[in-house]
Image 1 (cartoon, one colour):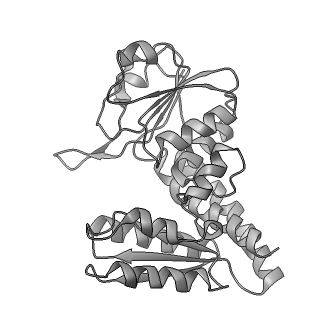
Image 2: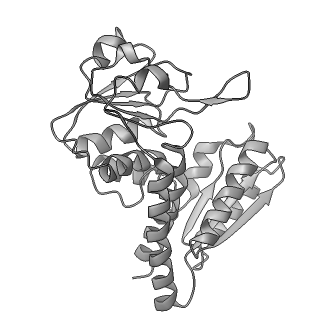
Length: 283
C-alpha cells in the first residue's frame, strides 16, 4: 500500500514548532526574529512567493520586512541595500528573491549576504560547510526533502538513492544530505545513460529536473520512496511534477504529490533557518 506524504501537514507542524521558538526568543531578547526579503522588479510569480513568505513569518511571530526595488535597480544600489541589512542587528536573515533581472549578477548578489544571515543557504561558505557536514543554514528545499523523510519514519542508512538533477539549488545539496544519512547516492542528469536502469535499483528517488512527468511508474523499483521536487505548469494551467503520479503511486511505497508535497516544506524550512540564524547570532 502506498503512503502519500502530506507535505502540508508536516509543514504545519514545523511552523508551530518555529512559532514556539520565536515566542521564546522574544521573551529572552525583547524582539522578534527578523527576516528581510529583497524583491527586485515586479515578476508576478516572485511577488506571490514573497507575499507568502511575509504571511508565513507573521503567523510564526517573526518580523518580516519586504524591500521592493524597481526593475532597473543597479548592482551597486542592490549591494548597498544588502550591506545595510548585513549590519542591522534586528535583521537575522536575508533573502534575495530569484530570479533577478538579467542585468544583475545573482552570484555576486547572493555572495554579498553574510553567511550567518544567508537563510537560503546559497553562500559558498554555507555550501562548503554542508559538504563538511557542519552547515547550520542549509538550502530550504533539500532540507525540506530530508525533513519529510525523517518525519515519515524513513531510515536512509544503506539505501540506494537516485537524485535526478544536479543543480546547486536542489540536486547537489540534497545529494550531500543523503550521503550524510549513509545512503549510497547516484546523481543523474541530461548526460546519464540508461536512467531507467539506475532507477530500477534505487530505493529512494528524488526528482528535481523540471521536466513534467519524466519519471513513470514502469521506471521505478517496486516499493521505492519517491520525492517529487518538480513544479511544472502545463498548457491547460494545471500543475504537475517531474513524476507521473498516477503510475508511480501504483509502484512506490511512499510518494509526495504535486502540489502539496515538497512545496509547502520550502517556506517552513525558511522559517526554521531564520530561527536558527537568530539563535546563532544572539547567544
